[in-house]
Image 1 (cartoon, rainbow, N blue to C red):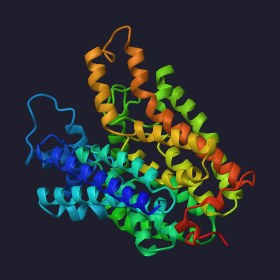
Image 2 (cartoon, one colour; image 1 turned 180 degrees about the horizontal axis):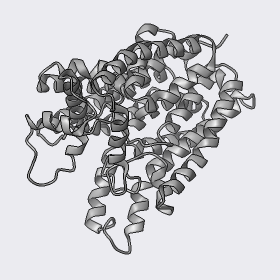
Image 3 (cartoon, rainbow, N blue to C red; image 1 turned 120 degrees about the vertical axis):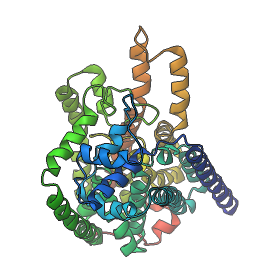
Length: 446
């Protein structure tokens, strides 16, 4: 075990080094558009200038001072000039907006790179006492295949790691104030990423519920002043906010579930249902029809399950994969599946058929949530004209749009099934838990 742990540690170092080196390379050679940083930065600058941070016209005017508008239409410019983030983000983005753009960008990218690498190491540490090589293999693959976090500079690059670190803090009972702060920032920025994770702690009861309510209080303390500030300078911000969302999700736009989506794939189930029904009302309804019962079943099990360490990890593994299915998300949001590693380690330690099924389903989800598999796929698809208009277009769409949401759905359903078996008394994995988790670090409901 000592050698396996040492090998796993060096494998993690390799994954982190490759992630940082490739990310540095793609940023320094000027290939990274960094569009999502610009959205946050210029909307914050606009608010500092007492402008409307949800007005495309005002942000365009500000942005054009540094980046003149091109003569031909620029489809990426809409990302910068149409703010999609709620007012709760401004306590985080305004300090960046006070800085010149390049120092702000350097800090932003450092926050993404550092928090993601640290979160992966923290997850590995939880699993290392049980399955260090297995955990290191999946986490290293995830690190090497997460370059788009830095390429787009999307805030999910630090929102997801902060959520993961908060979970580890709450489960272990260590660094709780820091965990609350991390979770609050994560929810303030992207509540649709970590919201269902937060719901678990609320439903689980005991100290977990206390932590959830404390986190909510910090979110409110961050959000309410920002909301009053935005209301003061932009009374019509809410209608503009929804107009900005609609500008991205309309037919043929970049967030249209029917694609094309590029190498950063969409994860929501509508990418599958829209293949069969072109009507948004129908494909949304079918997606909700699939997701709704799964969420209700997860809530029911959480309310009735025994409060054990294994059940906590099974619940989090299931809901982490599920969180990106009902509504719009992309691959960088789906890095939440890092939370499945401890659950996989619990099952793998028991070995047997169920362990191999868990490994297969989890590894497939990690593979399809990676960056390079899709970069390679689109290289071949373009050469074979799979996505062009023609007899093979439908096949190309299926190959491009189905694997990510279907693999995440399979992962969520599998861990939900394991959660139900263990939580409702049909099977008990708690005797096989990892040593550091079984040592009484989990806060059980009381």
